[in-house]
Length: 158
Image (cartoon, rainbow, N blue to C red; front, side, top):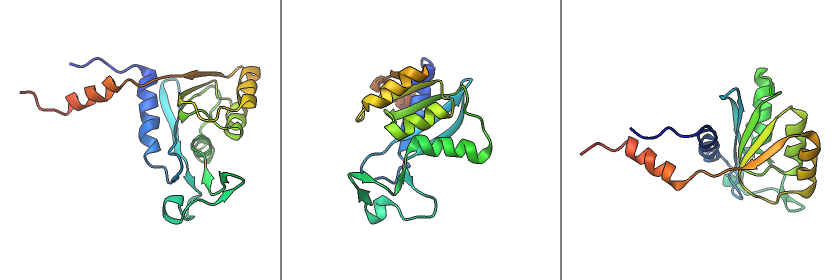
């Protein structure tokens, strides 16, 4: 029997898996919103539903930013809005530190804590806003041993 995966690694691993659906050719990001240890939404960065994808048509870059892409955090929040799921008091697990705009959206939606895997252009004002709003952020890791233990689950015993 393998050891159970800790909650933070469990939810971050889901964000990592979700990021594999990204249609952004510049950076694949995944986000999972969790309340009371239950996943309530997931999102990845990509084009608006029904539009062309960056991986197919290339990025539409204006001032150094792809304007075609909806960020993973925003997509997860929008999924909650679309289906009437409250985000107040929830936590976010995201593969990359949120940009300034996503940070503001997360604060406004009532997210309590942001767990992130990778630093990514951590905006000084985003960090300041999180601190002022009392939204905690924590960089966490998912050890490579975890992925090796998954292989063991699917390997036939000798």
